[in-house]
Amino acid sequence: MPLALPRPDACSFCDYLAGTRPYTILERDDVAATLVTYEQRGLGHLLVVPVAHRVTILDVTPAEGAALMAGVVRAAAAIVGAYDPDGVAVWQNNGVPANQSVPHVHVHVAGTLPGGGTEWGDVERLGVDATDAIADRLRPHLPDRVAHDGVV
Image (cartoon, rainbow, N blue to C red; front, side, top):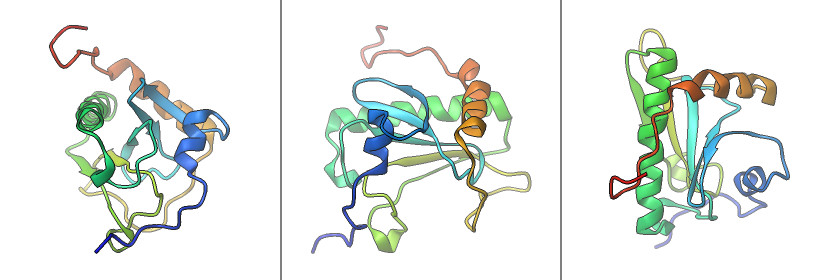
């Protein structure tokens, strides 16, 4: 039985990556991108996404999976460097019952809030100026890129 997926409307993440809708992209290559989400549920809350449209984790190729995980590690390192949180939360949802709302696979990475955890309720929706400022805070803490075989 297939997963119960969000409506397959136009994909906002594909629009952001194509530059047709404004959004803060922390970094990207040909396979994966890291976005600063409008809805900051933790410190430096980021989304790591495949550049190609993939609806769920089950649709991701092995190369995309490796690039996504490398992006998650880089995102976590940048968050720790920029915000010095007590913890880092990483989560990913597939299907409406799992709270997937955008039909493009994405991995959340966020520093935990003071006192622990992340915010699951309603949060303020930030504008691009605010998410650009978060990206500016994170960029100096991104580790150098290393290819999978150890060669840059």
